[in-house]
Image (tube, rainbow, N blue to C red; front, side):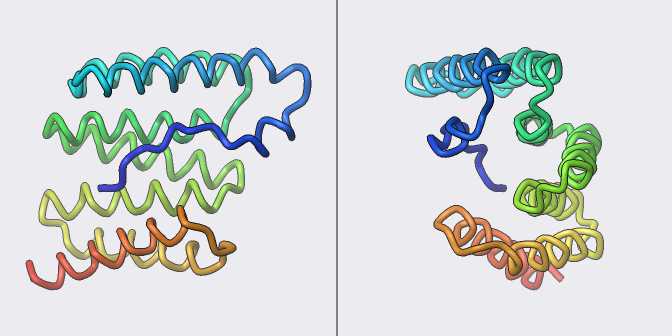
Length: 166
C-alpha cells in the first residue's frame, strides 16, 4: 500500500487565503506530531488513527476537504494495518468518494490504489484490478511529477502481484 505523505507543499500554502491560515497551521502541527511520533519509533496504527481522527475533525471544521480526503485514507490505512479490512475498505471508499466530490483526481487515484490493495488482501482480485485500472486511468491524465511516478509504480507493482496470485 502507498504510504501517506503529510508534507505541506509551499505553493499550496501560497494559494490559501487568510481564512485558511489557521487550518494550514493545524495541518502543519499535525504533520509535525506525526513526524515526531514516527521518529520516536511509534508506529502504532492506533496512535496514528487517533492523530488522523483529530486532524480530520479540524480539517472538516475548517472546510479543508482536500486534507480531509487524505486523512480519511490514512484512517483506512490504519484499519488495514490492524487487519480490519472491512473497515479499511469502507474508509478507502469514503476517500474515493470525497476525492471525486472535490474533483481531486490525484487524491482519487491514491485512494483507489489503497482500496485496490485492501481488496487484494481479502483475495477479491477482480475488484482490486478494477480499482487499479481506474487509478491508472486517472494517473495518466495528471502532469508528471515524482509523486505521480511513485503512485504509478505502486499501482503497476500491485497489478503484477495480483497476476502472480491469480
